[in-house]
Length: 237
Image 1 (cartoon, rainbow, N blue to C red):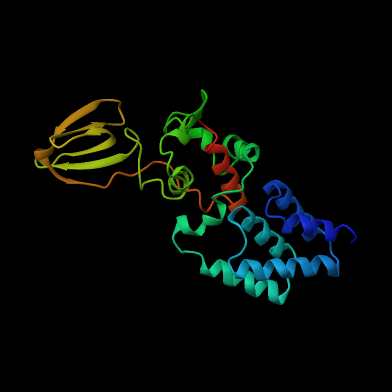
Image 2: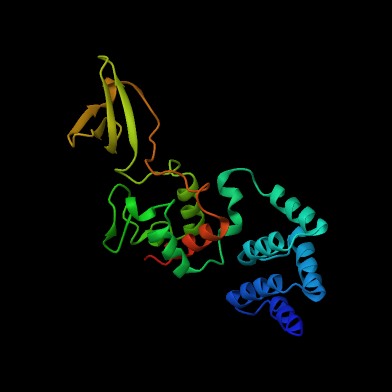
């Protein structure tokens, strides 16, 4: 219990390293004493007031879930209910503060997400999806937000050559496969047999929206795992 004041000092120090503050809130939550409870109560009110930095929000939420009380539960749920309901907004608490090494573990070894099954990093992984070896350089102004959107809404912005599309032609034929490229006059579609078909735009009666073969991972990863994965991906340059 004598360590609680020291942990509280670390938490209160805005200049302390993020990892130190994250470890401090976890240590407070693991200490079942009245003093620890008072620190958690104070952080509960800070969370409800919007005063907890994004890179600590996942940690505070986990600490409150591990140490339930009527007040903590009510204010935690109030915070979570106020988060945007769309998949990207739901995980805005995961944008910063992650552990890149833990994120690497998620990428290569998470049995449900299976990122490496479709994506390659530094020559290791699958080829069904884009090579992510330099993903952090593709959109440097919105890297974290772009990566989060790609994880939870994979069909929102699809890398060229990886979206699937179905074309209904004016002669009644249906052509489905990977959209390799397109311009105003033609589309190039690669069918599952590996053949590429160049289709004049004026011969297309209908086309489906391009879809990514990648499954969304918002139901697969926890907010902490999502945060760590984002932190790992932003190191890939």
